Length: 438
Ligand code: SF4
Ligand code: SF4
Image (cartoon, rainbow, N blue to C red; front, side):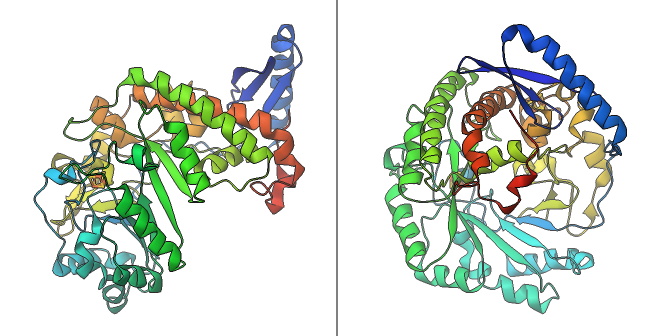
């Protein structure tokens, strides 16, 4: 087993991060780095040789026995015209999935019906435009033998009504609302077709959800040139709204491409954000940036991830005409891998490498210090950027380098708080199982 290390200089101290298990060591002095690393390496090799080594994950694509996650393009146009929309939804003619087509999808999935299936309505337009079908789905699923389904909806929140909200509540839909921050930040990109900002309507509808005691989370798109990104994070914390964030990427039709030069601004903003979170966490505030807390926990518990995603294996995306795609990020017409009437073309998936391989099977990733954090990233984004899923996306790699370096820095600063067992964000019962020390 090769163990590699990444060195960080944080507040005049030297830390080394072990790529294999995320263990972090504080090194007393710069002159000691080499000798201490030799000692650590020897210790790790000794303990690894006495442990049962896990088998390496296979490179081969193996068709999964189960399909448990299905994204559905239920309405592929949109009430909004967001500047960065990766599917350019507003330019599409309004098309809605029909009840007959949904029944054909269920028919296609019949062989999976002993398995619980999660249906996702996300990433393909605004699903609430087709509420007349959405409200029939739970009963259609039950009538057709799919009685263990769950439903996950991502909406832009512009046209939610009381009827929709009651329906989502009684049918236990998981709700995600796309929102990028306060009015100024959100309305810089998330606009109606007439150019008007969407913040006010969405925020009012979020209050409707709150009044009806419906839990929801926001999905936030981070633009690397946003000079107010730290304010966006503060907006969610001040309003006590849970949110996850992801960096914007290229659109399918190239009308939007993030500029790699803007990552300098992203780094500066992240510096402020991390500083703010250090203070909030040390003061024992509940944190609503769930991804940030989960990522600190990943470092703490050594949760390595060796494979990017389950698309093309356990998960597929169904287009409005019954075409099948690996996922919603990989769903322009030429990327179809079959349809619900003729089945999935697994040969095409394998030929084009439209699936995530174990990260150690990508030559560039294999030697990357973030390989078990990033797991080789999204193959759909790599395809969009390079027309080749073997090569990483330069933009994403640089983004991850900035992000994970900041998370590791924050982790080292918060370490005493994390292990104290007294912090509201890190009071997991199994904190004694933590394996890292500094
Ligand atoms: S809400 Fe989503 S689907 Fe609609 S335009 Fe914005 S990014 Fe595209
Ligand atoms: S995609 Fe980039 S950041 Fe991720 S493991 Fe590969 S080289 Fe590293």
